[in-house]
Structures are given as C-alpha cells and as structure tokens.
Image 1 (cartoon, rainbow, N blue to C red):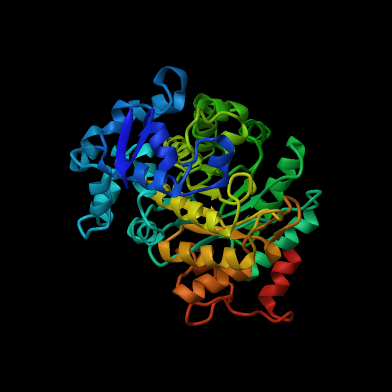
Image 2: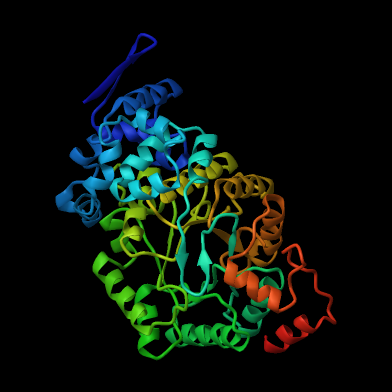
Length: 460
C-alpha cells in the first residue's frame, strides 16, 4: 500500500503499478484500461509518492510477476548491479535532478544504461516536463552500424518507407528514387509488404538490393514482414540485411505477435551468419508503440507507457541497428490527440535512449485521431532538438498502403536545414560523389535533365 496526504485529502494506491499508472500524464489508453488517475489532484499525489521512492524499489517489486513473464525475467536477470551503483542510493526524484545535472554527461549516461530497468526509466519520465525529456535525451548518443553509421552527433538519418498497396515493383522503385533524390535512405530502405507472401518478400528484397548494389549505396534494406518469414527468405537465398519484428513489453503481448525471445535469438543468428554488413553487424530492426499490449489485453494492469519501456529491454537484448516507436499509429483509443502523441513520442525517445537504444520515432497519426500535420511538425521539431536518431520518409507524408499520416522526405530536409543536421557520414559521402550535395553539405535540387537524375531513373 502506498499513500500520501495532499490538500487535506488522503490518497492511497494498492501497489506500485497503481502509483505508476496514476502518475502518468493523462492519455486515453490508460483511461480505456481503467487505470488512469481519477483527478489531477490524484495524479499529483501519485507523483509525490513516486518522486520519494528509492530506485531500488523497482528491483524488489516486479510490476508483472517474475514467474509469469519472460520479459520480467529478462529485466531482472540481466540487471547490471555494477553499472547501477552510481545511482543506487537515489530516489526517483533525486535521479531526475542528477539526470538534468552536468554530472550526467554522455559517458556517464552510456555507462549507466545497463544498470537501469525500464520501470526506472518510465518512473523518472513521469515526473519530468517535456523540456526535461528533451534536455536529457539530447545528451545521449547511441551509435549503431551496418553499412552506414547511425546516431552520431549532428546527424539525422531517414528511413525510406516506399510502401505500395499491391507491392508493385515500379511503384516501390519510384518511391525509393524520390527519397534518394532528396537525400533520404541512410537509416534503411524499409518496405512494409502488403501481403505475407514469402516469394513477394524475396522479390522486394532483390529489387532494393539490385538498386543498392548497382550504385554502391551505403545503406541497408529491410522488408518488414514477420520474423519467421524473414528467416524463410534467408533460407531461400534472399539478400537479407536486417531482421524486422514488432515487439512489446510483456510475454503475452509478444505471444500475440507470434514471437518469443528464443525465436528472436534464432533470427538474429541467421542474419549475422550472412555477414552482409560493411562497417558493423547490428542486424535487428524493432518497432514498438504505446498501446500494443493493451490492445491485446496483455498489459497486466500496467500503464501503457511503462509497458512500452519494457519493450525496450526486449530490443536491448539483441543489439539492434534501429528501434522505432510508431507513436501515433495504433489510434486515438490509446493516444487521443496531438498533445498526447507529442508527450508519448518524447517519453518513448527519452526512455529508449536512457536504456541505451538507437531510437527513432515515426511521427505519425491515424486519420481519425484529433491531430493534424501541424501537431506532427511540432513533435518532429522537438525530437530533432532532442537528438532523435532517425525519422520516417514517406512520399507526401501519406502512406498509401498503411493509410496513416507520417513524415515526408521534405520534412526531413526541413529538419536537417533548421537544425544544421547531416545524413550518416557514409551516405553523405555517397551523395557528394553522386553530385547531389551542395558545397555546404545541403541536398542539391536536381533538374530533370541532370545526369544523376537520369542515371537513377534508368536504374529504377
């Protein structure tokens, strides 16, 4: 039992997960689950309690029982006590103050990451303002490598997302070309296939790999199909660079995705055996999103942001190249409007980085959410200031296959220009060799008669 008195009213909470849920900034998903704070006063009371809790509380009181959940076992069995030692005596509130201090610099935060549990990261985020989340996240650099180096200071990478409602190769190729001509694609060229056809996935993988190989583009490709399909593609000799999978923060939710930790380990080993990386061997690509466990009724009464942070421990176990929170994709039942989406995006980015992950964010919303492109512009800019590793590049920001609104190639150009950010170094060198950069390092506008454009058009 946890309790405090605020304004003459006694507020009690039966357990730690009730405190965590009540302390969370309001969002529709927690209200749907029946665990949100009943009032702003109760929310503040829960935050008072949370701020005074020792961080070690989260090592002693599991939100989801150890015996019932392999993600809990992964969290607790993998905890690095030596890395945790510098903050082991702190409360959640003291931890917040330390994170915002000059003592919490890049080396200190990198060394601390293995000693933090996702519940600790979620707890401290709940008592932080948006500017706190930004200020801490921008200090953290998580660098990963395959054919390009992602996450370096003053860099912003972009995933080309060339989806097509029928996986038509010409349509996919046109969207890839569009992105390359605007300096995008250094994170990954990643296609969400319209079907689960393994021959279709093999065809898409070969399409991208042929284009990449023809012009020696230093990037990686991925077809975002189920992990078992990717392994089947590897067995058929397809040119697989990255293994993709959606993951969640509970064993039951992952079971709903048709996966467990053992399956992810097998897939990673299969991809590593191909030895296709040139500057590194980070071969996994994970996507997450607040509300995924709740939508599967697999959240165990834990608030959606904390469950999301637990998904990052799953991802962390496999040294991913990319982790992407698809922040507004699941819908307004979980994040109702632009304000909730923005807060969730900053929380996810902060928690992921704090836990040592290479975080990107799909700044997005569904068409029935109370959000618009201005809301997405705001979040995009905030994440750029916060040092996000990568964002999405979707033609016109409107995904014609998944039917949701994301960020466009033009949005990436805006953010790079506004914050003086550049692509990954290997990709920037390629753009320069192709005559696609100005002397100042900006992507050059290419006329239709330009030789580079003609060459790429011919390839596509």
